[in-house]
Length: 114
Length: 114
Image 1: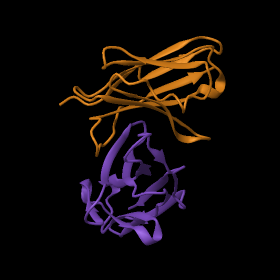
Image 2 (image 1 turned 120 degrees about the vertical axis):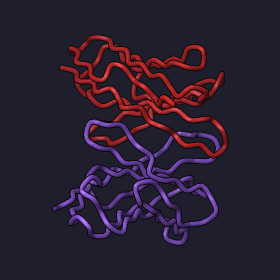
Image 3 (image 1 turned 180 degrees about the vertical axis):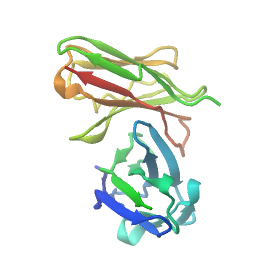
Image 4 (image 1 turned 45 degrees about the vertical axis):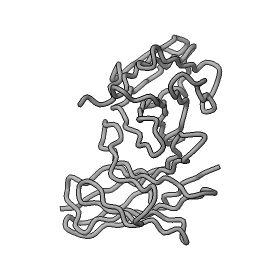
């Protein structure tokens, strides 16, 4: 069974600082990987996804993530955080065949200090 | 175009009552998912519909939960004899159903069982 670990429950960064949110997954084959963001009271918005090919993927809002098979990781990064980035971030893994449901990590809540 | 919509946005009910939650997927999407987001359990998969195939009900927590999808479009999640532990945000997502698919989420229904 697949699983996702987001080791940081809560992260605080200053506006303008760089950001890295960690995600580790467990899956037997090549996974489909996603990062979603959830603002308070809102649904999930897709930031970026990795299916195959280039291991560095670009997403919306200036985010990027790098798939590292050797480390089973898919960390999310942003060079300069904006106050509007404060939200909860979820990493998710999906299977290419069979059960299509996503397995989510427990989320990382990002706080941005002025 | 229109995204995934869910109704009601909020629902307060008394323990023991039945509730129905509705999801309108993105037009043309053949796959539809229900997830539950609660404080103690994070984001959990409930049920998955793909076209005319039998749904994957493997995530439903008890036989009080059921879902149907009429005409391959709108879906209703029904919780019978609600319990306080059913209080959560119920999220619906849809996808194109093709090989490399992205799930797009609705805003959710916040259910509170008193």
